[in-house]
Amino acid sequence: MGVGALDRLEGKRAIVTGAGSGIGRAIAIRLASESARVVLADLDEEAAESVAAGIDGETIVQRTDVTRAEDAEALVSRAVSEWGGLDVMVNNAGVGAAATIVDTSEEDYERMMDVCVRGTYLGMKYAIPAIREAGGGSVVNMSSVAALVGIADRALYCAAKGAILAMTRGAAVDHVGEGVRVNCIAPGTVDTPWIDRITSGYDDPAEARKNMQARQPHGRFVQPEEIAAMAAYLASDESASVIGACMIVDGGVTAR
Image 1 (cartoon, helix red, strand yellow):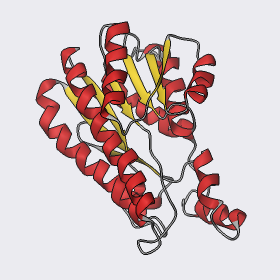
Image 2 (cartoon, rainbow, N blue to C red; image 1 turned 135 degrees about the vertical axis):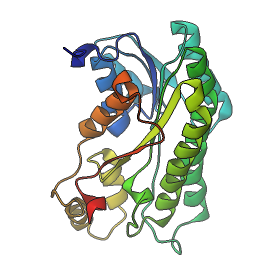
Image 3 (spheres, one colour; image 1 turned 90 degrees about the horizontal axis):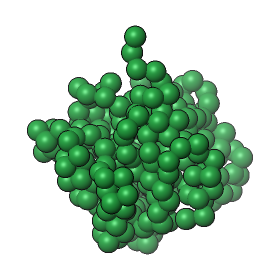
């Protein structure tokens, strides 16, 4: 009989960035439900506190700007100092913008690259040594199907998420010998507050939302809990041979 779902992550100490809403919220809740201790990191500390309040398990909330090295270092140090080590790092925090290359502002370019790419880099830079010191563990980065196929009006987002995929593979090769597994997840269009923010910029937000939903061959948005289930698998010892992988959860978008 295998390990039960409720204690698959028992004893593991995890950090989830962007844990205050959407996919990050779902991942934090799922990891905790499988008996992990979870640090919920978010720029919006109140949102993270709200998520933590609903978790029946050991949690820490840490206000974190993932684009700042001192914040990333302090985040990892907090987990190590309070819990004696770190086993799982989920670099989930991200932002996006709806625009072609021509229409993407330099400010949006810098923001996407800073949060998505720099944030993932800094998260790994400080988490990997801590995970290595703990005897090994798992890093889960959040890429996207936008890294694998062209998505209309998302050119710079495609670039940012493509960088995360490439960085994941490179880091996986560098650190596999240290017992640190690095993988990423490529979600399709997930039903999160991000969708409302993206579609609000269109003339007909309802139509834009409908079009985003129709992109998935299975005809609906992917649910945050479906991404969280994949993150829990990658965090667990069941995925011991999954290294440098891109786990696609997209309702069939990339199958076309």
